[in-house]
Image (cartoon, rainbow, N blue to C red; front, side):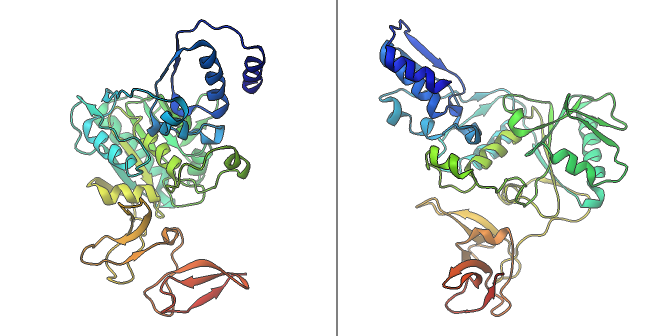
Length: 377
């Protein structure tokens, strides 16, 4: 329909008297919408005013293309850029953490948001749980938020619509019921508290007194979701983002910033790459309900953890030891974190997927010093 409207304007060239065209949520614009605006603007000579936040561009799956925002001059011409950096929802302590997190991707426009809200000592709380006590962990955190803030609304967020049902299934005879039509979470003992579950995508533009995020696990359908774009979608959109999980990173940023107070992250034993990154970069309050999630140890010093780091020259990502500069071991393949297979031969490298004349196989990261391989069926 949008493309048809654009074609009609091109053919008929109507006379427009618009002086200004204002576009809100510009970070979500698609090429089809942009082309429509472009045709109207060329016929009217109107000034273009765009308002948006590239840190919250999360609708690529629906056709939005962040390059229309990040390369604004290329598509629009000479422009003036103004920053709205005063925020009223989050505490400065949360803003500092989330700003540092999102701006690791140097393609994001660098900003310095500020808040006048009171300082929170622990704006993000990490809660580790096992499959056996998942429900207990959630209920304990809800009770803790109520004890601190009273019976104020709590928003529970998930990367996927099915996350809450998967979470409830972990506990037989669960005390939690999810009403999909109303988004309401009915939890035994908290009937008087407004608790809702929605996806992070649906939460954009919303806020709540307190927020809990589910499904922070390292999995294909975890957070980040590691499913690749539909190949047809990739053909239609620009390939402007080389940064790994760039849009998922922005989506996680949206999840973290829905709260007016604090955000609780519920983490299973196989912790999300995003959760581990926040843990490494900041000092947080930890709540351990069972056991902490397993981490990938450095095979050289044995005691450090392998962490995602960034090359300041080309912005590429790699794995480095948490004991740097004491241990300077690095690995270029960050997929190691997703499926750790220590080389059985040299005991200091990891087995990663490779391709050869006879198909795919696993080879040691220490090749050519170590030639150990594993055939893949």
